[in-house]
Length: 90
Image (cartoon, rainbow, N blue to C red; front, side, top):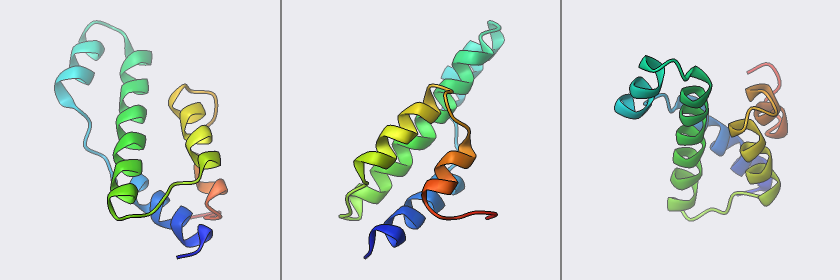
C-alpha cells in the first residue's frame, strides 16, 4: 500500500466515524461547554480512525498525526485533513 493509499484509507475511516461518546459529550454540552464537547468529538474520531488503520497493520504518517492533533485542537479545519490525503472535493 502506498502512502497515498494509506492516507486515503485513513481519511475514509475518519470521515465515516460518527459515533460520539454520548455521555461525555452530552455532559459537557449540557453544562454549556460546547468548545470542549466539539474537541472531544474531534479527538474521539481521530483516535478511532488512527486505531483502525493501525489495527490493519499500517502505519499512519507522523505528518498526518501532527496535522490531526492540530485539527483536534481546533487550529485547522477538517478540510486540511482531506487535502493532506489528496481528496480534494470528496
